[in-house]
Length: 122
Image (cartoon, rainbow, N blue to C red; front, side, top):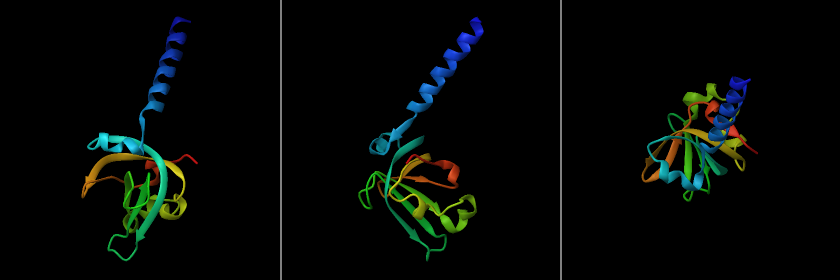
């Protein structure tokens, strides 16, 4: 009984910590250089299909150029890792995306290689 109660408490603590591990897109600049689960609304998307790798942008927290963070994928190269087209499916939805936060020209971004890095909230 003692071990069961301890196990249940440990699971509750782990679950609470897991829920707190996500960050809001407005705070993303505090976490540059780390792996995070970043959550917010996708305000705008852009698919540059005419580029060699078909780069796609998912702008979270605001429309380009005022986004908090951009999810970036080379859709032509990685489209087999998606069951949907992210720029169409995710626009105007609240999502979480997980990955390494870095910057490009001073703006935060997360590279998305497959849909397992994305969780649709609403």
